[in-house]
Image (cartoon, rainbow, N blue to C red; front, side):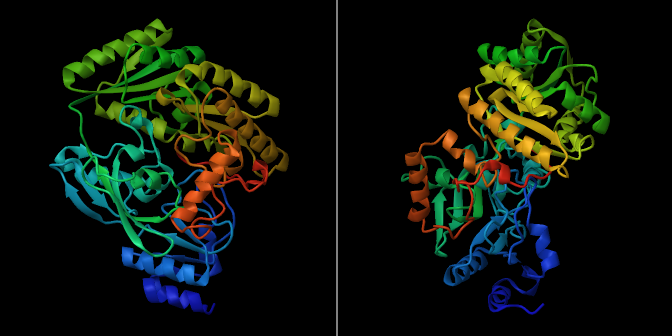
Length: 473
């Protein structure tokens, strides 16, 4: 196929090997880990901030929409194309530019894979805290766009709590810098505004992050329950005792049986639920806290509490948790993963509601929770080849999200809004709220130039989203 004029201009900026435009190549970019829309008109792979700025200026001049993209592991349709245009893939911008171990800081390009950063700074006794289950593949730029979390953000916060500064290319092609390596820089918190903006305000080309010191000791416990409600009550009880775990995860019996069959991680096949709990710190403090956790679990009717005896056992338990979504893919042709948030004290009620919704629509639902902060990941099993099941899943998912809001929560905790939940935004925002947010696009000169068709309601029903098999959360 002969390259069009704007393809030739993109090649002039990014090089011959930096642009895709053949239809068979573009097909790979019409979906993320959740959803599909349509293929882009081109995909371009810049390596420098100057190249990104040049591409943005070209797109602005020709009025072509731009969709920033990382590894494509997103779970809300945030990196898919809705209106044609150019996908600007940042995966080749993968340099760790600077590591400052004394100040526990690093400066990286957005294409750096999450886990690769921790591996690179491990020799200094440091690591990067936010750890989505897709951390072996997801990029830090994508984490910034969606304000990603993960199991170990309970005690230390999500991405926004670990990003100190950004380099951003605006829709005009202008390059700005927000924040700094140190805390408390004066002026408006533009870094906080950019984190979680889903690529609609600007394109991040450098990220300054805070690193954490590896703890002296880590204790990992597996609490086993015959009643799922007892597990959810334990979560609130731990908080009431003033115990803040580094991680506090829950899986129900349906899910953990699939996980055990796939990973052989040591989860009990006959239990109704398990809590995977991790505490860390100085050795004596971690040991004392592990004893306190065990006592609270037993007081709340845990059948047993196991302590991982060594690092291999700990890593195996976490392997099971982080591969849970893939394990469920072995028992269902498709599943739709949700991402709601509720107060942790309402977990028992939410379990009841999801059981009721599942029965109403004839859908099996597996549950994986970041239970400590009330972040739910129910997985709805279905067969995408059957239109009736697709419709039922979409309706059930919307009802689950509405129930989250009714219990005082939100429609997303870490996956973002994208196209998946844009029509649900009125559940938590008034028209005035949404209009004010839209005005931010104008303030940054973005309009509909960057990642159009995302976050804000369009008037379409949520069931129109073409849901595909889910990925990691």
